Amino acid sequence: MKSIPTPPIPVRERHRQLTNAAILDAAFDLFQDAGLRATTIDQIATRAGINRATFYLHFKDKNEVAAALARRLVDIGQGQYRALAELSNPDRAQVRAWVVTHMAFAREQRMLSQTLVEAVSAEPGFAQEYLDYLGRIADLRLDPLLARVSPERRELLRSKLVLLQLMMTYSVHHLVSQELRFPGGDPVDALADMWWNEVFAPNAPPPQD
Image (cartoon, rainbow, N blue to C red):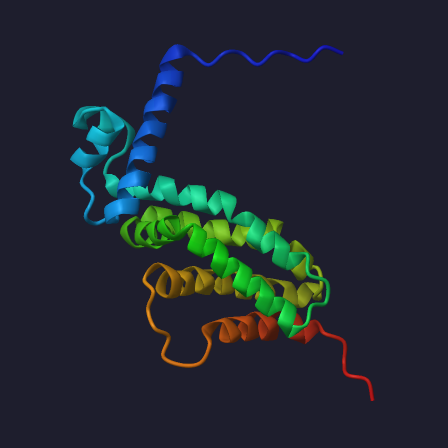
């Protein structure tokens, strides 16, 4: 059976997509160099090879650009939580190893991690979108964890998974993006304990006599 060919993208739509991508790529480079707050719309437009009027045809302000960039991190970060869900009856050491890997991923994506938090703070609409996204991650990527508990406990665990993801977002921002000193012991151990205690330990088999 022959496949139906995909219709070509209209020239105007293709041009719109290319301009949109140019703006995002320009913002990515500028945010990497100077950060969101110090970067101006004029700088983004100049780097993208457009004028301000064209910029405003695509985005209302640089916060909306930041939200669009943050969606890139959201898209590529799903695998981190899929890896956590694939752990089968892990011990604390395995959960800690996952936290270390997650932090390393955030360090690689440092600029996008910082942009994500700034976009959440600046754009209430995007903040709700991100919170809804965390709920979908719980349902779609962490569903093996939800399946481990009874239906009566599932909604509570889902809420915990959303909050734990939110905690990871801000922990990454403070510890990795801002490089703040943690006023206590190793935060990785603390983060691993939180995931272990709230998600895995309640379902671990009882100790043998």
